[in-house]
Length: 305
Image 1 (cartoon, rainbow, N blue to C red):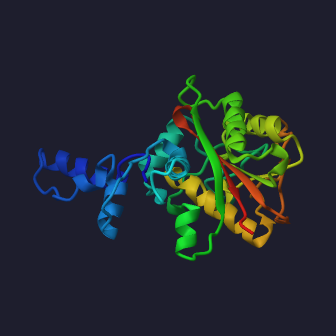
Image 2: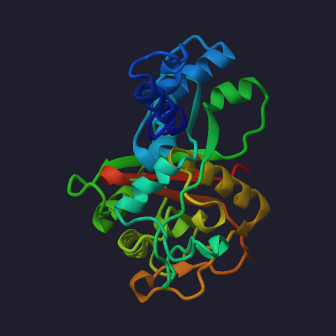
Image 3: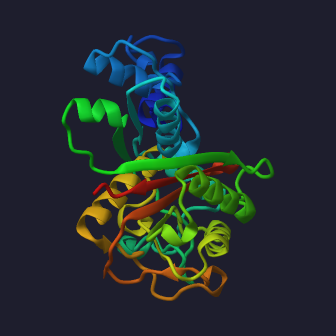
């Protein structure tokens, strides 16, 4: 489990007291446990009394999806039977301002926040930062059957690769490669996928690169949507959060549309964009997450019959 970084609220209060007191006077002894690189996984382990291996994953907005892929790899190789995977980030103006400074945050809809997040739309002007926490439990089939438990879905495979080219600009070619490798590891073809969950955040550069990559792999026949217009960009939590939403879509037989996608940007044309809530038979889902630093993740989830 992990986060993009320390809790910004705690970090801000720590430095505020330091500057006001010209030293450590008045600081809480528990502050360090909230701002360590492994604070999330350490606190969760402590809360549930866990004794065993832990791994603090931190890859910005692909954190929880990378955690899920690592968990799948650990179970697939026989190292562990059960892995707890997830991510969390809390909302703070510092988090928002970081995206604003690099011209990635929405600015033109401050008086109309309900339509501010507009993935793939011709009038999009940036992402909307939110917050959240999401956890997924992965378990080997043998362990699950021994418990006589019913699974919610099956994780078939996943892949994480780095662009190695630019800190903030996405690369469509690497995105396409990650999706292709994920399909290979899942032993599925592109034609087997019934829905693609896009991480599109409504940025000027990222959305077209994603659309190009999805079109390269799936053409125009597989429904594609982004959930960022519904609940914003929850940073480290979004991968697991969107995986959970995808599982619910498989259960309900619906594809949740991309909110505020009123007019598809010609630069994002090609994929089969879902603009209205649609009923659909979904057996296999491919979900992506792309983050700063060129971090690209893709994973495949399947319905269990």
